[in-house]
Picture: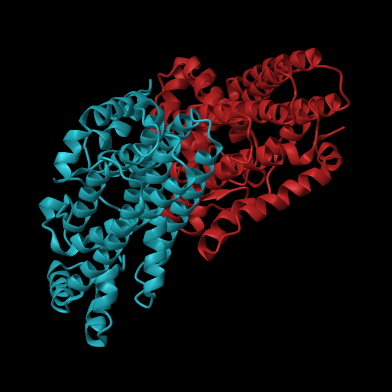
Length: 320
Length: 320
């Protein structure tokens, strides 16, 4: 089984979620409608809605019960991408111009705010107080993670723990919340949704580290954005941190701060690759995925477990 | 009685709210802490917390009951100011550099997101479902209002209704929500908090129109920003719309789109003043304030009614 198979098995429910997402972003403002549908229509892996559905199966699954959680989480993710692209000065995402590129920074800021507000409005449909509490805490952490990303830019002296804490906040916690809230909204018992939180946390960490690896190893076409963009922006990721353990390589890497010349960047990327830090980073993702599989074993038997297994495998192998 | 007297009477409770606001924005990220405290420490009229307190008195008032509502609303307001300053390219507010000026657009976007997330986290302390529903709807309208402000920029053909709908979304609804939610959180009955919503809506409309008038009539020092800034940014406000009823004046005003020269702007401001559109705008604020006073009459007798009366008077007379 692969990711596409999972997608096909869940097709009907994913389609309902997709329709609801489009409906939610309907607004009388033509500009806001276009700008907010822009990312939605670009597609994406929809990993968060998929995790909400699969985790929801551990409770009394009903698409209507988990719909609002899935929609809200995907919207929060989308809003954070739009604001991130303002921060990172990014002009392409998923192979299409970003909101800030197609319109401008101003439209992007408010489109993000609008999508965020819509997600909150959706989530108020849910009465479980715990859902609100978990979600708002996640959003606080997410925004701290994002500001840390600015703060830590070009900081070549940062520690590994700084990196791991940052990606936990920036990515892993929202994926963890997707798993936990899907189960919680479907009425799964506490021990189960807490385990799913940890499952989501581990795959979320692996997911972000893989993203950081792909920035070096994937083609610009697959990435939908230039290769080495993270490093050029001063985002110090795991492959870079590992490569910098060699002081000579570090001296070369820090040059990226003073240049935007493609040849220099290419040479630095080549050097990083030659240190073997990519493979060591892959090893770290596998450690996280192993922990995720361990949690999966502890979860009650259920027919969706092979699907979650496939997700874990996908995150370990994905090339885009 | 004047606004300062109201402030003094409510001093203890306002001080508690102020302390809580500061505490909420405590975070381990030094950058985020500084940037988010930046506006808070600049002071401000605190009109929303004051309205929350006064409205709360119509229920079983208890500072602890209304604290979270007051803090959350002030934070939402603050976050929207920070994002607005990115949109409007504003470098000063309340006589101090804006977050975007002191740091940059990127820090401003995420600081706004952080403050917003914190406000949501606070509001989850409140169990009343209706509070969440009203607040999220208000935030959706607020973000639509903000994008409309971008969309309507330099649109010299816009109708009066476009302006009124925009300021309703951008300003009046959050002030209306302050009044309603204060009462709701303190357990006031439905008829009362709905009346307070309308009271807040009317004073909110008057508040924004007054803001738009002050852009022309106040000194740069009192404003804490340059005179005529709104018009220079392409924000077409009530005094401008009224002045443009004269086609000759309109021909002069539209020139603002092509120039940033201070002399031209000064001449246009002078022309607008000479049409009498400022006084006509003041008349409109008085119409709204009259409606607010009418609602105030309908509210149950209470010792805070004279204080609300003072707020109405302050909004009609304020010079800053």
